[in-house]
Image (cartoon, rainbow, N blue to C red; front, side, top):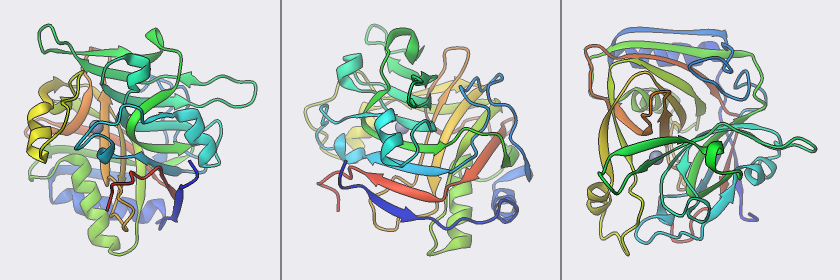
Length: 310
Ligand SMILES: [Zn+2]
């Protein structure tokens, strides 16, 4: 991973970030409350993470990219979360985020919902990730706990990861209920940052729960076509579903792409009732309730940017 590029991010204070998000979300939700709080214990339900918090040396890694999937899937693009942790100088980091599984491990394509405490000397990784796949028999989806079947920490094609020491600490708590605008929860927060910070790039990672309502999620099918002819062809290939709360969503977003071919937002969700996949938006604006915990990152690492990217 010798061609990793690092970018120093603009890091607003948590108080300022809370103010910017409060203002932005107000345009899109009826009831918004953003504040700075102590991170709740994320080892508890519904989160069940292998660490207590998302604080300490916060970093973002954007690994690979959609161009490893479109127009032709590069199934030999395989990465290891443990290696990424070392690459970003944070071995032992807790990583959350959104990506795709390794075709080599799973034998099929699927969504990966990252939640891994990476390995450190003498201590193996604790892999709390989930995968969501489409069942070819009936076209329905299934969510599986990664570690129940697989022992590695690999992923394929791409991932957007937020890394930290997994410590407790101060975070920004976001409560937003009843959607009144057109933007989804993450898109609205990202646009608020872009609007406020302009040329400065702010990167955020964290987790949120869709407590009430339903959401539109996609799951990638098990097999790739030989070639995607257009973005519309990708949309036709993806399987879209309406899934039920409570959904726990692992989210990474940056206010803008300063020319590194970044994916500016990526959120994957899991649940304790078999639902999971890639988040697009809620489908129940009247009743939806979001509760999230976020932290700004200090450095972004662009790892293995696809060669065919502009
Ligand atoms: Zn995704």
